[in-house]
Amino acid sequence: MTRILKKQAKFIVQFLVPSDQIGCVIGKGGQIIQSIRSESGAQIRILKDDHLPSRVLSSDKLIQISGEPPLL
Image 1 (cartoon, rainbow, N blue to C red):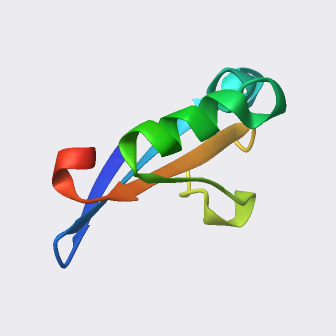
Image 2 (spheres, helix red, strand yellow; image 1 turned 135 degrees about the vertical axis):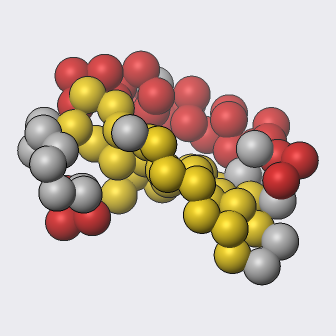
C-alpha cells in the first residue's frame, strides 16, 4: 500500500514495510535512514502503530517521507 498526499507544495508519501525488514531501512545505529535524510533533504518518519490503516497486518510498519517534489 502506498499513499501520496499533497499539502501545499509539499508531498507526503506513505508506504508499508514488514517489521522484519524495518532494520534494512533504519540501518545499524540509524546510519541508512540518516544518510537518506541528509542526501535528499526529505523528512523520513516511522509512524507509530496507531497510524496503521485498517486491514493492514499489525506487524507492518508505516513509513512516511515528506518534502518538496524534487526531493521525492
